[in-house]
Amino acid sequence: MTVVSSIDTTLVRANFRSFVHYAFRKVRGAPLGKQPYVDHMCRVVSRLIDGEINRLLINLPPQHLKTFVGTTCLIAYLLGTNPELRIILTAYNDTYAEKLSEDIREMMLSPWYRQAFETRIQHGHSRANDFKTIEGGGVFAVGATGAITGRSADFIVYDDPHEINDWNNERKLNSVLENFNTVLSRLNDRVIGRVLVVAHRVSEQDLSSYLLAEKAWKSVRLPFMAVTTKKYELGHEQWLRQRGSLLRPTAYPAAEVERLRRTQTAPPFELFYQQGLDSRARLKVGPEHFQDFASFQLPVGPVVLSIDPGVSAGLNASRSVIQAWKNQGRQFYLVDQFCEQCDAEGLRHAFWLFVRKYNPTFALIENTANGPALYAAVARKAKFQIELIRPRDSKAVRFKQHVPKIRNKQIYLPESSIWRQAFIDEVIGFPAEFDDQVDAMSQYLDFMDTNPVIPPPRTRAIAAMRLASG
Image (cartoon, rainbow, N blue to C red; front, top):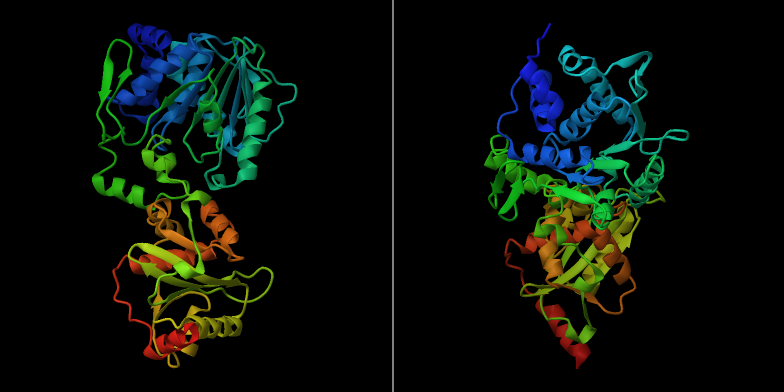
């Protein structure tokens, strides 16, 4: 049996930080070591334990011990020092909530914990998601939409309110907020009852964004990579975190940091890892970022077609998109657009309509769905260059690199087009159910980033345009 010395017992009981470090060594089999961000988190959580604050939000990146410290250790410590506390533990679903509760129960049943504290779990009332102490306290764990009727609490811990895949689902984001208000109603005392929310950011409309706007809530927000140099209280000393430093520098080499910044797009890196503190988290696209142009303002120059092919016709089919673009330097004009559900024959027909109308000198066809079939049908007949494009990155990664162009108002749309608003709605709502227009735009902007040499319009077409205008 593991023996806990009297000195260790005193520290484990009296100091939450000491409890966390001791519990980590016992559970993980290795010392926690020097982790200033963990000590800062323990410092603020201790204020919650002592009642100095009663509403606390902790935002940390994934894999940074926020659940171990803010849920498992906190609840075990609370019941060790006050076994009469009734605690509601909530998470994004029942399975995860039960797993968290089971981890707490296992810690409280461990030999080292039982030597440090006199708290004992009742026999016959020790289910993974619902256990009681002999003194009448305990834990009830429930998912975000689970029933808590008849339950009350002195302390509420809400761990990871949102499932990651729901980061862009407005209905589910709102559902969590509604549930949170229901959970708060179960506090025995709204004044002295304490609440902790432990989460990483997933959306500008997540629960954390709501709580950050509430004056009653204290927050700890630690980004993966520091955006400013800042001092943090550790108790008897301070931690000076330098700008650009990582919370766990030995765990994330430079190549991994770069990979995360490049590939973490859903939820975006600036939220999921940086907790919304990076200025790039505010690089959202809005209707105000698109410029209008009248027909007489369209620049003279070659047209490039960008085509995102769908699969087939029908109500459940993806859409096919053909966009006609012109540019004037780094200003990009979307001249016209076709966006419909159609089969390969319908896409081929639309393609030739755009060719006759806009006399393109280059066409980009995504090498997916009906793209190869379209290329095979038109490549020999077309009198201009056509290129099959195989996307290298995800749609989100490709779109993300062009957001600065949009925000810098480099995208121009015809002021009177019937498709203008639908295009804007898809871009500002990306990623969502439909992304074909965004994909075609990204494909064109990817192409333009290569500084291509685009042939001028054919002489016959120029002469015809001059004759028509004269």
